[in-house]
Image 1: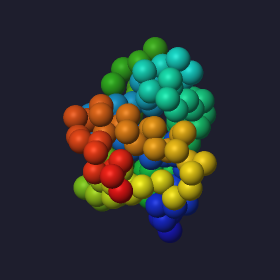
Image 2 (image 1 turned 135 degrees about the vertical axis):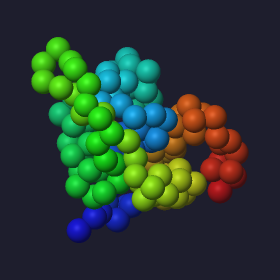
Image 3 (image 1 turned 180 degrees about the vertical axis):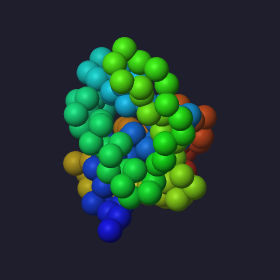
Image 4 (image 1 turned 120 degrees about the vertical axis):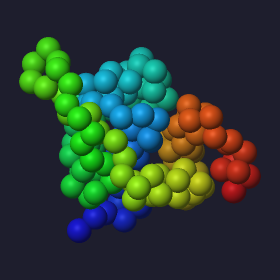
Length: 127
């Protein structure tokens, strides 16, 4: 049974948000999310957590394979969000953080994802 939004990890939401920017494979996502990476400067996740998030999102029907690409090892599966995944992401990005303790991580990563996708941040901040 798919998880409810509150049960989904922040890493899952971030991976879904990055895939909404364009189809990608786990290795590239892990590179973005590593400490010091483009997104990792705001929210970092290890490679195993990134791949676990991909597996969970696929199991819940929020992402799907788009194609495979050659890599240094086995072929890399490129994923993209499903229509259901895009709807879930839009709802999550529009939802204010529930607790003050979540401002540092969750709110900042929501703002980053909104900015990366050229969407306005002021509705979230006003909410």
